[in-house]
Image 1 (spheres, rainbow, N blue to C red):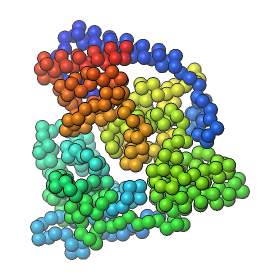
Image 2 (cartoon, helix red, strand yellow):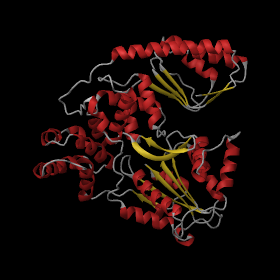
Image 3 (cartoon, rainbow, N blue to C red):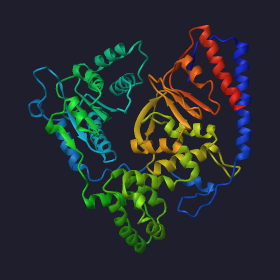
Image 4 (cartoon, rainbow, N blue to C red):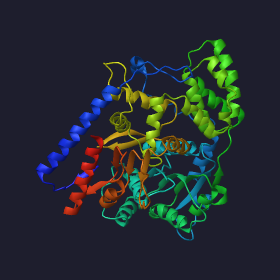
Length: 495
């Protein structure tokens, strides 16, 4: 939350800050009194003693991609075809062609596209023959914001943080200036399209319009659950590729890679686990997401007894059931931290340090040893979610001039987080006109409207967190009064 030129009288501002400090101090005392020792369990959940948490590594899951080499090479060949081969629209002068990957959620579309993107990015960095001048990756959520997407494109094209512009048109013009005359590779991941909504087609066309000023040979790679989105963006029949099913042996290899990676078991137990694992893999219906989630959880408990007890669980018979099964075996506090992530928009770029601080501030962290630091325990929770594939490494972004990792949540896991969070978490996104649930505790606002905040949140008795993902511009005395009211509401609410 950024405040600009508040103009508040110094005394008034100091009084507000003092009340906030008292509230935080009081909350910290309550948290100290509520610290309870971690409960043990005998249901297969990984109850790790707090004094062993320092041994957990921060490394994420293996980035190895199994069974997609042929698909990747096929798409890369399409990316580098000559114009007469890819049937670009030379009559209208369009300099790009579209390649699309379609399939159901959790089938591996994004993983395949990421595989291709990483290859092209490496070729660009090494200046290999035929490389693209600009390589960009953009995730398109179900409710997307053109301003945010154009800003991401600008950052991908320049490698720098996108500056502020006075309007969307100015931003678009600057982006076009950056892409003009350059051979561009743009990946649009997870494009949603409602064939009954005539406006969707126009909005999607607008998103790719900056590429039109590029150099001949530019390419747009699209992933979507439906072929209709690919048709709308201009992918011809030969360039609309269904995500291929993995063969039985390849899928089993993928599952066992996640389930027995770095296993420290005897040869005898390994053979038994591999036999049980084959039965479990058959239940997952070749869903790569389910293989990763279930396999990652089984890897934490590599005992024959546990694997055998889970082998016949009907919950694993579909992808969402498998995700629920994996979620059930997370520690209770880790589950709470995961549910909290639903406060952020879908595919939001999560920063590890920021998320850790939020969990600590919310009181989600339990410690049982005096020498433990809450942030260290919160990092352990984060690593648990990463290891179990509930969080995934998205890439790198620049923060304050430094490159840092960012993390995302797969759409199906996000659906799960929303369901378990219930009415505790809520988001106000662009053009929101509805009502905020009265029992909401954690509120995320992606746009700044001072009057809307005071009108929508002034009666929320249970609200404990308001995250404003936008700048607050204070331009009048009326705005100052609204800002002070908002400060007072949180101060008294927490106190």
